[in-house]
Amino acid sequence: MDIVDLILNLAGVLLWVNWRITSATPRLGTPTTLLGTLRRAEPASHRRWYFLAALPVLLTVRAWLYWEIGGTTTWAPSLNLGVMSIAFRSDLFQRAFFYSVLSFGVALGLFYLWLLLLSVLNRRPPKPDPFGRFVRLMLGPVARLAPWIQLLMPLMLALPVWLGLSLLLDWMQVLPHPESFLHRLEQAALLGLGACLTWSHLVAGILLLHLINTYIHLGEHPLWGYVDSLARSVLGPFRGTPLRFGKVDFAPVVALALVYLAARGADHLLMQVYQRLPI
Image 1 (tube, rainbow, N blue to C red):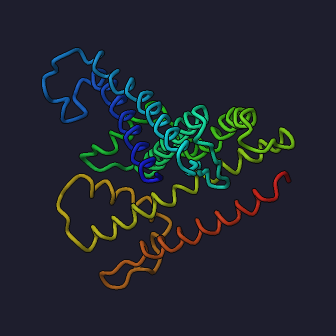
Image 2 (image 1 turned 135 degrees about the vertical axis):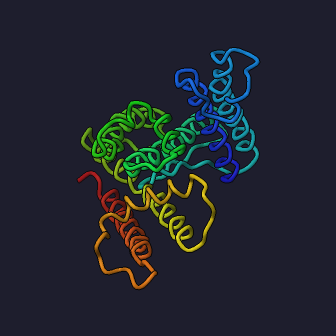
Image 3 (image 1 turned 45 degrees about the vertical axis):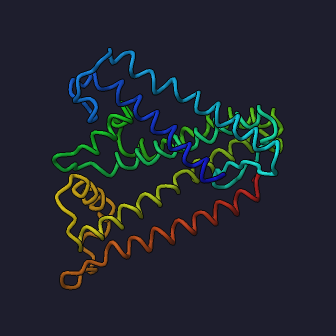
């Protein structure tokens, strides 16, 4: 069921992305998708709402599916938030629906977290830059903020989001009641830091693709220019270090190892701190 949950979350994110793209296309004046180059058979103002309207239908149908399964099996959905995991009773439709919405919210939040980092890293975009244009379209005005503000946004948003969500989870008796308001603030801070740790997966993916493209010619697709631009930003601190021997550059390998070790160490530290809350 975890695989099904992941696939349905990806479907929900794709519906959201298509809604954002079709909403922005008339304002941009040029099509942002392949379908946008075709002649529309109906007004775009009507067509773009189909994607957004399909999203609550998907989440409701998924909740009903989990509720049906929960009544006949012992499967219980669980929401992984990094430092904590929240289990839900799927034999109650209210809990199953709440999990369906929250699970999609976490997936969409992760998608935007990665977009933030891509926006920060792509400060010297290649030409053409269709992927950078997509990121800017998704982020909207946020893409024009200073990089340090974008990097701090997970921490800034974690506080109001968790305060509201924890009150609801407390009311539904899904989580133990925090000892104080300060306890909630500490939880929010750790959740925000844990969200930032998900960037390590994206950075590792960028470095791996950069390594592959460096030693294997994969064509002139704009994707590889975009990946190289991102990798140059990631490897900026290694510029000038003696990590190149002949034609072989070991900087991406060293960066990959450091990202892995730092992410593992930070994750372990956050778990230790969370278990000791409230401090």
